[in-house]
Image (cartoon, rainbow, N blue to C red; front, side, top):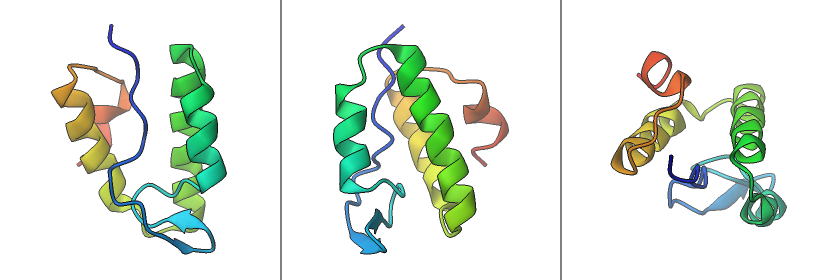
Length: 85
């Protein structure tokens, strides 16, 4: 299995109280994700990010964009087909 990629979807505009309008990560969170080496930690980060997006709102576009990124890298996560649409 390939390494779980960054949740970044290449928008990178930090306008919502320091959160990216594309993925909801802050600059500190982006740096933190880069330091995560184990897939279980990366997966936990992505799950945390989904909860953060739900709390912040306005991130429904992210799941579809990230699912496309995962598909391109041939990575299957449980939620990428169930909740991405």
